[in-house]
Amino acid sequence: MLRTLSLLSAAMLASQVSYVAMAQDASANEVVQPTTSVSIESSAEASNRFQTAFLRRQVDQTMSVGRAISSIASHYPQEIVSIVDIALDTYPDKYREIVFAAISAQPSSTEEIVQLAIEKEVSSCPNIVQLAIKAEPTYVDFVVHAAAVSTPEELDEIVRVAVLTQPDAADSIVQTLSQEHPNKIVEIMTSALNAVPFVGEYVVDALLAVFPNEAQTVVETAVRESSHQREQVIRILSTAQHAGVSQDKLKEYAMSAGYQKKTLIVRLVISLYIALSI
Image (cartoon, rainbow, N blue to C red; front, side, top):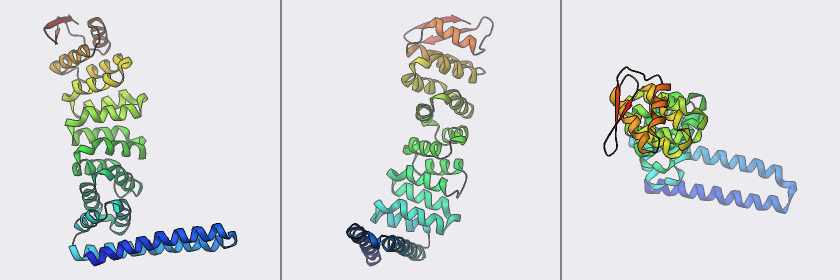
């Protein structure tokens, strides 16, 4: 195993030295540039073939592409993205095993791995998002960022799947995506709260922290999407008031969102109960 890995390292080093030498030759004599370009392409292809053959040998030895990925990543963490690239081309039907193993072994490369898997269309974007979050839940923000950049047209579904997969990170997910797509705050909130209604207060708190001037949009959307759950509305309004929104504004936002029930008293708890007639 170590001998094989040493061969991989030597091949990569030789390839890099070859590139430098060819670049120097090109600078010294522009006439050989076309030949050098062809040589670079040939060298890159040779390196790719070597890595593919190496990966296949590791898969044969470990009897699992996932174990092979984990083993290679432990010795060559800096090469994990290129190995995943080759693995997805070589074993596309094993994408779940490949992505899960790669992210678990090298979480810092999560964003690049997710983008790569989406670009290669080995599965739908939401499926890849779910898989990546399960592999490393603490990197959920990197996962949704990569997915939203790669397929912005699927933003709503990305939010829904991410929040369902990791509900404890709903506030962070919504905050991250809203900062990247500020004109989509309502859509992002709606998708998140429809998927996991009980996170309303946390989502409101996270959004008001970065969008204090969007209090009306944030509170109205949260109340509207939670209007059938009285306790959630109370928590949402209490959270908003704690963030600095006045009582009069809260009442106005709640009524604008359609939360109008006769004789209903919404008690907002901060240090004491504050009654608001809606």
